[in-house]
Amino acid sequence: MSLAIRKVDSSNYKEILELRVAKGQESFIETTKECLKEASEDSRWEPVGIYDGDVPIGFAMYGLFLQEGKRGRVWLDRFLISGDYQRRGYGEASIKLLLHHLYKKYEYDVIYLSVYDTNKGAIALYQKLGFYFNGELDINQEKVMVINYKNRS
Image (cartoon, rainbow, N blue to C red; front, side, top):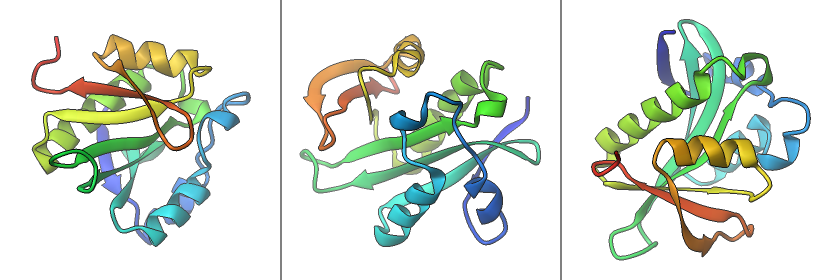
């Protein structure tokens, strides 16, 4: 496994659009097309492809929202591993890579995400990596989870 994060641009846009979650997971996250449209309308979002070598296996979208909290919040708002690549360890490895990337990029210790409480697989993964529920709900009524990157165990 040789994972890398690549910005979505004209060179990989079409292959990112082809990424799909597994059947039954469609209600947990927007399509990559919807995410890329949202990112084109709000410059705070940064969409990225997750690659194993030259093969796109996943997608994420993150951003810094300065109007939230005292100093702002870094959100890992979208994350998916394409259905064809699930159950191979990519989810855990990709989240670890993304957390490291976000910490280096923004230099914020705390990173936020949100998840539907019915997405038990994602919740288990996030908790395994040190995320915990902070008691908040986002605007879509998803439960907010946080991790303190520097103080994780």
